[in-house]
Length: 281
Image (cartoon, rainbow, N blue to C red; front, side, top):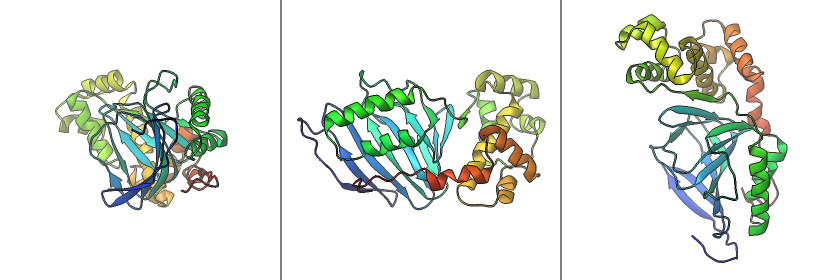
């Protein structure tokens, strides 16, 4: 960590699985923040890991899935993901991704949300985030972070979260549906395959995820479909891969979740970035 009152600018190139992540800033102890640029040109995944800092990241292109032991979140353009320090997780993307990430040391005077979440953001918050990536003074960054935390704590979480069951048998069913959203097996067949009664499977999903099995499966299918939406597949292809035999049904369920059609949702990929002169990214 760099000590003293002067902010020192650091540009480094780190190689991770053949991809480059460029560090674009590092502050002193008073703020304990650094920023990095996310650049993956193809599908990418990480091993399970955790950070001693909180992570706040947003994307201008593509999609990332963050998974903890009992929850998955999908981060898309037009949203910001917050993940507290020491959270054991892994991340993956299905295609090219561009974005930025702030790594923030826990600080009592910066009341970031206590729990992980993905939130919808407007142009003001995106501009705040981009401004924080610039090489400004420590005092300026501190004030901007205070404004940012105030704004984030007023946002409602987006429906981009999927809670996973803890019971081993129910989790086996969940993992199968996440690996293959187009799975044609019904609940009875899945229960039989994994050695659990239909009644117990229904009870466990409702008890451990807060959703009925059918509602959970629908949420899993819609969230899984986003990876194909953002890789540019046609809506017919996305519906098929997601397990919908009827394209209209898929679009209807998607609109119910997000208030937009898949095509309209994809437009976020084109409009989320707000470049600021001098950012060097």
